[in-house]
Amino acid sequence: VDPLNEISDLAAEFDLWFHIDGAYGAPAILDERKRWLFAGLNRADSVSLDAHKWLYVPVDAGCLLFRNHAAARAAFASGEADYIKVLEQPDTDEAFAFWDYGIELSRRFRALKIWLTFRYYGLTRIAAAISEDNSLAEYLGRCVDEADDFELLAPVELSICCFRYVPRGSKASLASASVVERARIDGELDQLNTRLMLAVQRGGQAYLSNATLRGGFALRACITNFRTTQADIDKTLEIIREAARRETG
Image (cartoon, rainbow, N blue to C red):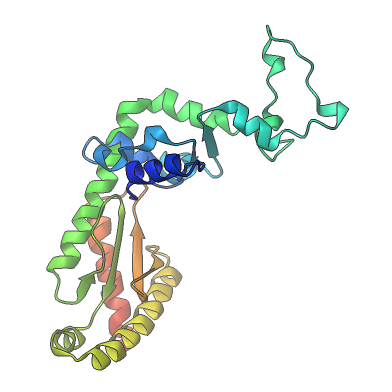
């Protein structure tokens, strides 16, 4: 998570719009253990948030929140075509036109499924599910860190864990490798982990994506399903190991 307060200070100093891309991570503010990471979120001019990513809502459900709704209208309202112009009716809901606050003129009632999810489950249960997702990612990070054939590539802050498979022989070689030799081994590991990710995806039992960290290839596990368990985490690591055995013989 970026240092939001520091970025907000810079934005204020240079009179810049402060937008936060919270599409994936913003709901984690509901986890009390992680709330400190979001200090400064309240200073944003706008925040993007995808409810279908981590509020357990079906695709698609994206939100763009503005501190000042007039800024949104100034950016998106056409103000030209008479047939979409809403006449001033301050005492009725019809005076508010959603098409003046985004790029879509016609759109589905996406807000309904968000409202229903919160109405049915309640904020407390949703927050607990998010906290559990974070805990599972931390569990995965510990499993990776304690294994002799995996390597954790970044600290686990939220529900994403980035790591790579490292055959035992390669792990030993890396420990004593020169800069040139390390670059060669890292390149081979990038290729191996790319093949492993594709094999896992094709297998259909788990899904991993990828990330680039310090120029290297990382397996990326993102846990945002309230049905995920520790057993699923253990199974995923075994699936990767099995794919590695097939790849390396």
